[in-house]
Image (tube, rainbow, N blue to C red; front, side):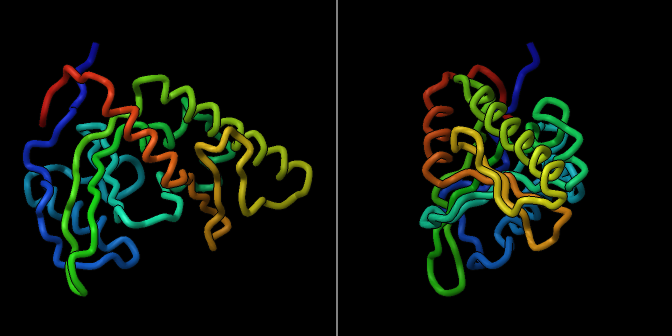
Amino acid sequence: MQAKVTKLNKAINPGHVIPLVQSYGNIGRYVENYLASQGYKINKGFGIDLVGLKLEIKTRDINATSAQTVTSLSLSNLLNYDWHRGPARHKITRQYRVLYKQLDSKSSIVVESGVFDFTKSGIPNILKSDFDMNRRYFIDYVEKHGEYPKYVNQGSGWLFLERTTDNEVWQVRITSRNMNKLEAMTKQVQLFDFAA
């Protein structure tokens, strides 16, 4: 059995003040840059952010209510790769999550951070089923109508696909309520791995 990272030793901790308020992913970029300054190797291209640790970095305002984008997929990836062969599984199932709230008009504060391992407690089966059902519907829709759907939610409601303004990219999204459920499920699992 290969050990998995369950904690980042040089991470952003609760109480850390971010000198920004959320605007178009700037807090996510701040977290990536901060981790890079602490010696973590950050992938700025396609694929997971912390490749060596097999972790995707995600940030979220704790007061946000909209669905969360857990990854974006190119049209080619969506058409050609199922859950097990494509990049979505790697970007969704193991995340370093930084939850924050706006502190004032110029800054935010981290309220929680940590590694969330969605590969335990039956979570992979839930995510795989929804992803593959939505992907199958997407492909069938394209074959039947000759165009791409804007929105696909044909699974059990955990994950859904939403087209961006660019017809070549689709977001894989999850509601805030369901992400909270997944986070709670991961916190109930005892972990025996290591920190990096």
